[in-house]
Length: 258
Image 1 (cartoon, helix red, strand yellow):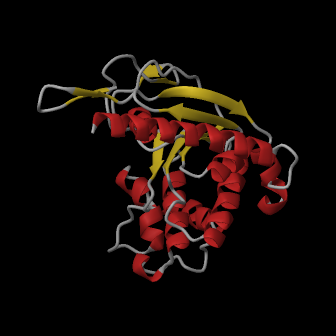
Image 2 (tube, helix red, strand yellow):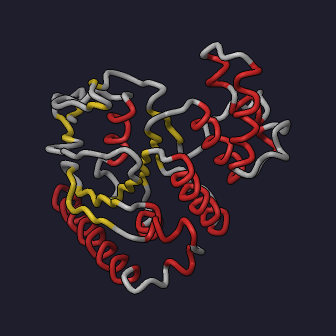
Image 3 (tube, rainbow, N blue to C red):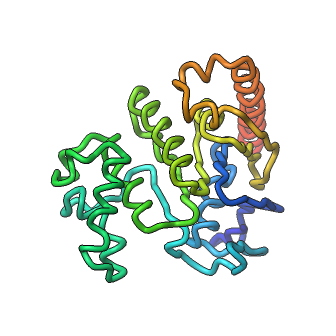
């Protein structure tokens, strides 16, 4: 992905990024600021067309947004004038689905995300964590094959974030959905990625890939116990060092340019 600038120069946001994602995989993407994580997600979502190359899904090329790819943003992007139930049922209603068809499913989704007692509440009455639960339920109501998550838990406090991480793992296993999750947190990337990509910047590219056991462990175990796994701390330190070195390199380039 190359962005042309008004002054005639350009920014090479991504270069030579190639990957295959299998149905039902949970992949986290991590890297320093400016490495193209969100750009990559936006290309997969169909919000951006790549300068070169293509994205294909289920045998067809992605040319734009589609209900087969659901998006959960850092802030829920919810409709403030609708209550919780109306937000979750928005997709089915826009498709012309009758209330009798979607009503039970919406109630079931709200129960899955722990909001069955809040269905009539206005969005502004909910905490940040609850709003993200609504965003997840609304995404699932559209029956996407792939769920794309752009820093969905980044604005939450530590305790709420941990609860939401457990919910993401639970929904992943229960629904069998394919999930791509962008995060700046090394611990979160380790916990929520059975497959983890570390991206390097300028141009954005895949630096290293890991296959990890922690997401599967976290489905049934307390995440604090998962962090005590023998492999967790060494992986965290290895990836932290990797990203720290990248940040140092970026700072060095900036200082030389100045």
